[in-house]
Length: 437
Picture 1 (cartoon, helix red, strand yellow):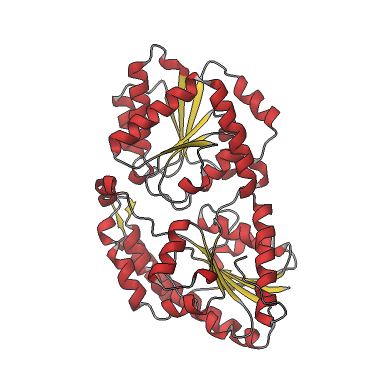
Picture 2 (tube, one colour):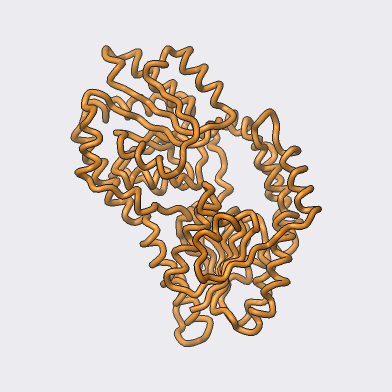
């Protein structure tokens, strides 16, 4: 099977969306003859592992480079990115990329050089793929697309810190961007990275349920799956301490400040403060504020800030931790939660967005986003309970490892292979099958 993959962000040496794009590319290459089209920023990393595969790099012109530098400045305020504004202003950047893809591949698609076209990034459901116009005889697959998860009503103040007042730009963009709605109408199947986004596409873009399927965009690399005996050995090396871990960007919506408040509450109510150790991995606009909060709450002997670390080192931190605390109030991705579960580390999360779908009551603890005080109190209660009940902690750890098997990239690759096969057969008329099934 020959597949054209349109993955603007595809890079094994980056994090977040580019890394996810790369994992999809690698999995697809296992069962397809893949042609990848991507941005030239990914060339250096991809050429190291390309082999005989065909990769086409789109190089932006001088104007696009100038425009990108301009919008980075316009959408940054005191070191914090104004994401709603940047996403809105980035449309011309993706427009140029999309136009180049059409120019390079429309004739090859018409000539049936490919059996399927799969457009994957950007993952936010905000930009069109005009290459879909030419996929009349072959299936056009989109996604996983994800995003648009709102701030909970009880956290509107935090939302304002993340410039939620500018979210109206997303609604305007849906009607102003040429080809936006048409792309979703043309797609043979749209993969959605969360139930929220799946329902949003169906309702707002009036896409039939039969053209929508749920597939989390994140997955877990093999090196995060550790033998249970090895993980237990690392954790038993420090039996007297309960090691807590937070990994993520240090921004207001991630909720790390609430985690510090919860630790302070536990310490105030406990006779042995040294039974808790918290490691905070990551960086962001809130780091200085969080360090000051830690000092103000007299937690410096308990809390350690590491800053950013290479992705491969995250597995070591997760496997050596007893609990993963991730009180992000608006998280549609959250791959680190899957990775924690693969390491057998029970997760405590806020139940809003994708992470609330990854974690179940059998393998972790979910906190309703009913307000700052509720989250802090619930965090403190959950951590205290699992600190004092090793059997419950170990039971959740085992269930988390079992649940995480569903999230491995190899499993995701097999699911994608089946989807490709069904779509191609369905389009060619060989077999009339509902592609979602």
